[in-house]
Image 1 (cartoon, rainbow, N blue to C red):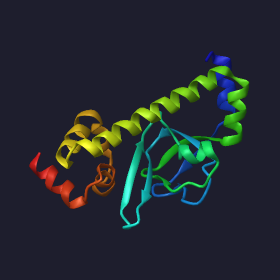
Image 2 (image 1 turned 90 degrees about the vertical axis):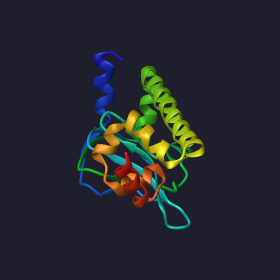
Image 3 (image 1 turned 180 degrees about the horizontal axis):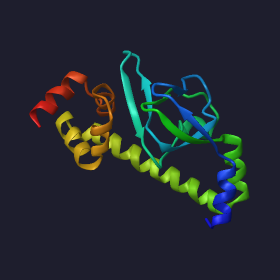
Length: 175
């Protein structure tokens, strides 16, 4: 996008500040906003039938986040979006986002890029859960995303790795 298009796109976003632990989306609601993280961290998580908290994605600076299935389908979501740190966000509504897709062809390309990136992240996470044990998942995380280990609490990190906090503590003490 050229500078004029970027300026126009940005005019559709509003800046908000959110405090640590604030929920931006809860199950049963339709995801009607797309968040861009200027500063801070958001997590996308759900609670399974055994009341376990399972984190699907952690998003840091310069990343978009929403409950994408709900955002696209306009159906209620089954997950939460929560601020893990005090965060500065830029937010666009679904309606404004859709309008921009029709107004600016380059924004449509950005949307495709966001979807492709999300697909690769989901595929990578699913592959690691299916093919790696807890030790290998932790080592892969240390290698590929050390900021997660540095910035997240043990409980959030354990939920992201799909292991118990106790298992994570044992892993950290051995590595």
